Length: 69
Image (cartoon, rainbow, N blue to C red; front, top):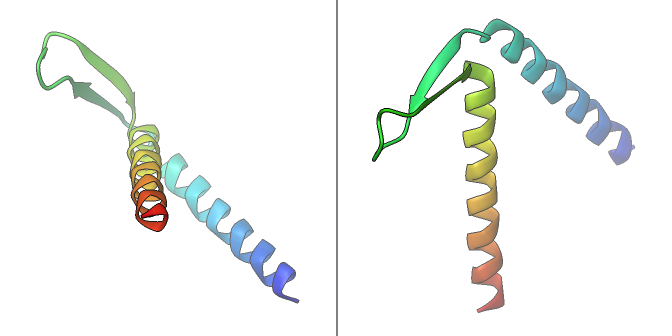
């Protein structure tokens, strides 16, 4: 029963993220802090996904370091 609820929750999150990505496809320009002559243009949803993934990764690293101490 728990596995079914887990999979339904995963599917719901995936559908919500897919709808969010399709509604936020406008391009944004990211400029580097030190060298503003270089920039990257990508869809807003991709930029948000990248920064969300970086946040999850950094949080996981801090939690892992804290658990080992």
